[in-house]
Length: 212
Length: 224
Image (cartoon, rainbow over all chains, first blue to last red; front, side, top):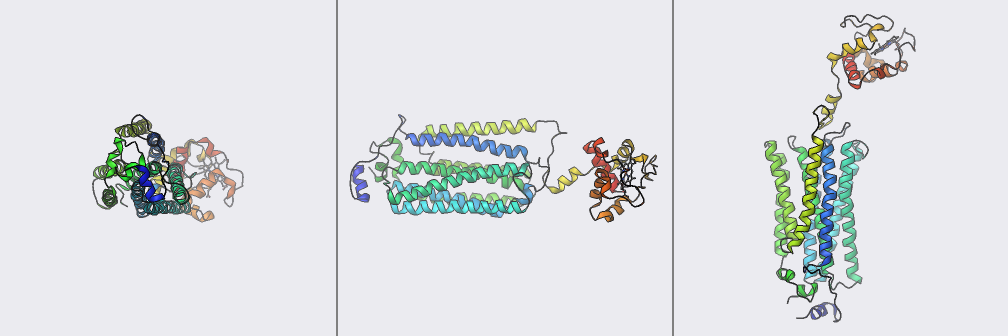
């Protein structure tokens, strides 16, 4: 079966299709690029997280992490981000099946879950603000807001990226775009795994020996 | 050739052959597993376990979740191994840098390294040692003007006798005793004790002592 024939069942006409740029390894260049970027992003977040750890316990002004971090709320937001990863995987599976309807549904829901996560984060940030924690309050505030803020920025960019694909799917030609969606998905899952680390290192470990 | 393989490319690259089977059921199972693991992570905090065990559990579970998402959702398990290599090269450098930075910075004389976990510990850290107060009181010349019965040699009569200061301080201007005492030293004219002239007590006395001496002095006066 030719690829043109497959496309025609969905788009009603057969014509050109997009050729990916493949490296000699047989892997699309876009994918290699994304993985290389994610590898570098590991170092970026690694620095932010270790800065948090290094200054942990060195704050000479209240409030302290144990006094403001909210485990139930953050558990809920972590769960939402985790489930958005499932939705993202379903999005990629749908575009790989050429199922445009499901693709639109799943990518839209991925965006919504990303937005819910950001909602939780703004709730948390305002809550901290009211409890007297600003970025300039103490070392905890500086390192915490810089790290989680950078992560939130990653989520926000991801939402924009996904939302543009959702909109594009109504006006543009999705043929040959499966690889682009997969690459967007890699970015999205990465944001999720960074949060898996932050949730443990910053939130959960804080309450060891104290109780939540 | 299946539809999905052809969507990727007509070249039929070997690396895509795996995508011919349906991953969706796997994804759903994986999401259930990840949710359960997250539940266990949080539950650990509510169970009384030795700290070391808790930490092992928390870091271990995070690593498992991380690995599952990378292998399954991000497909590294099925993809060209070169991608795993690229990613974990960066990841390893990041982890090694973190470990090195944390180890280097924590390696310092214990005197300068403090660890404050909450406001209570901060208060304890800021509290001076009242037993060292009398020495400061004598050394900094307070005794020339002030008397304190419990301190031998403190017999000055230019300023008020400081016996019972801790009790009366609170009623002086409504602030906590320590705040009033600090104000009396840093800015003596803010509240001038009845029967004594303003401007007699020097306003620069704080600058003659170290932060620790000052803390110890205030802690001592507060207890009078």
